Image (cartoon, rainbow, N blue to C red; front, top):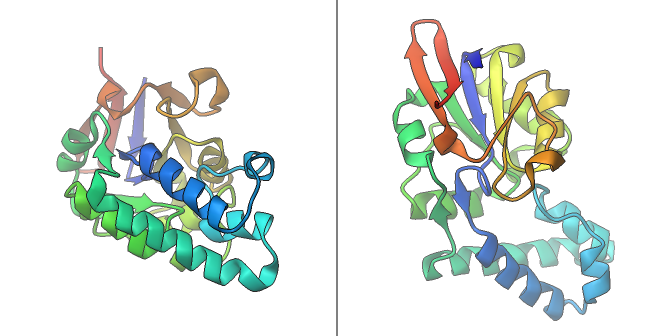
Length: 216
């Protein structure tokens, strides 16, 4: 299978990098500080959603802003403690792409996204973060904004995601979706193509765009 595109849009956590250990540490401490029970915490979808939406599901409206600032601080401070690592295939794939052909589209805040990406040496020319949008994934707004910033028709973009919410956002934006089975089982992911991680893919840059294929 070969997918033709003009721009590649990557989720960050679970797609380019793994920060699961950091997320568990920080959100567990955050929940404890705000008196959130394990039962209540388990009932809220976390992965692939902006922190402000998670906090709004769990806390009174008048403390959400403070709570979001607190989790951002906890996660940023955790980055130097080995909170982020590159996932297989990330470096080789990104190094093969021109800077104006790809973007990172994350549910993290800009401060946190830049900290995590910077820790592993990823410096995207185009970065869409929670600060840039009003509606997070699974709404298509983040991916549509990325396409607009790159100057590419959404129909000619490919979204790379590990989370169901992100894949729904990509489909709603009218984009081709590639799912990575890094944080979910393959059968849980609904996408045009499902692979284990970015190491399973090869890319060829052409005058007309990018060709993506599965390695044999």
